[in-house]
Image: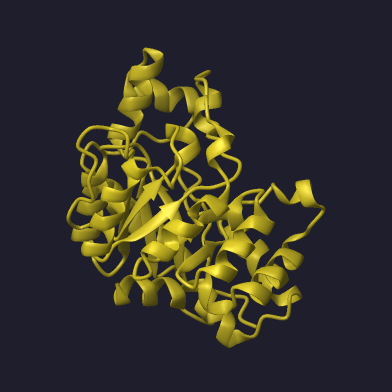
Length: 295
């Protein structure tokens, strides 16, 4: 199978776009300026202009031979940052944004390719009737819906001493079952192979053909089930098939930039799982480009 970025175009389905507004929001929670937050966590402070950060990501992706990336605005209300990035570089970025359906005025803003829902973070069930208006908007705007399930840990909050009062009661992928069936035209993306709810994520994908699994992060949840990454890929391929897996890294901050170690680990795992070059091409970018073009 393909194991280098020159073998097939690579599109990353999971990159956090930590804008200046993201740093300011964290700072407001811990009594620091955006610059002080950046210094405390030893990250680069991004430019105030989102297009400047987008340009930084273009340079980074170019350095690693990555064709496109889905950029996630990682606090509610920051949709404008990723929309601006995708508008400035439409051939390089897809615009995703975190949305809290319990917040007043929550909506699917024009220009978004996907909305990102974090039930455990914001304390709601994906099956809650208050989420339905957003899902209907997503269907009408031909927008994908990313739903974070399983274990949720936000490292930057730990570094700043901020609490992460997440509620795992709302983390089960099976909560998405009836919702996904009710909206068959909407692609639903469950990141990190379900982040510890792997069995449930596989059941969901088996029952709902519009559910996709993203492969991003180190997938440290594997220790809960005694699995290694090749085994995870084999099982996911056996249930969902190669056309419903989306490669992602969970890259986020500078100076680290794009996390090529995740790419290397995942391509090695796919090779060990017997993934051929055609299926590797789908997973490493073809599927993401297809579903976000089709919707």
